View (cartoon, rainbow, N blue to C red):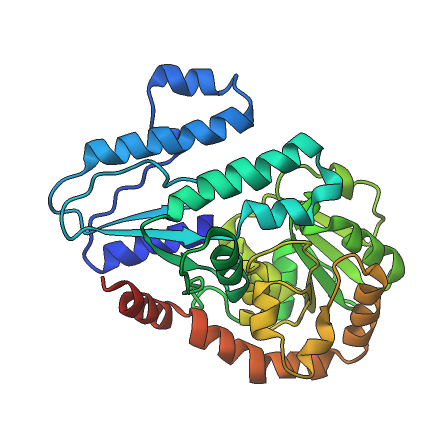
Length: 348
């Protein structure tokens, strides 16, 4: 969502719009911002929508062309000038996520995600608006769960940044040994990212040099062995070089409406082993790349089998990425193509 919003801001400004962004850090009183640090994240998350909505309402004027909301922020009943478009973007649903990670959260937490965050806040945020989704997977969820029409517009990706680069030069940048095969995981250790699969792959394929680019806590990544390189909070500008330093990437998510990391890796020319998520459905559906899609995220043995097949036929899959997947990513996500599609759909 952060990457998507960033590209929206840049793209709207490039097209002559003045853009104001309201978020947790710049709305509400100073007293509220100090108090919010003491509130539970459950309460704080709901108050964000209230404060953002009120700030947007105060900034409203007759020349506003559109209001674009995301996630659970957008339920505040805004009064907009005539002709102003109301748009909402779904990056998945909390109900879908709650079902996927049910074994890892408390029952009250499950109910809160499913009924309050999703069926109340997410649903209200899109009501009465033109609604977009990041993938067909999410479109189906939104229409089935919330009951209003949704259009898949996807994510924009700046492929001037995410492109194949010299592998050895990129490996030197991160101090990665050039010998052997390099596997990459970009993500977190949170339950929805299914980090136990990565731990299983590390144990089963010790001949692979593993690079883990993690955000947040690295407690689960401790004690993984000498063949594992852990990089914390890698800056976005360095991520394309990290993909090009690897031979393949892994995205075993239990729930991921699109998984931008799949498209980024393919755009950089490397194959991806993935679970059935929005981006793998879209870009890895045809042979031979469909060999790399594991039907069940809990099937750790399936990921191991796919990894061994990939490592054994690496050049075959890299060639398929260049021939099939990368052109598909470019047609759907490259900035010029994405903005033309979005402008046609939104009427902006």
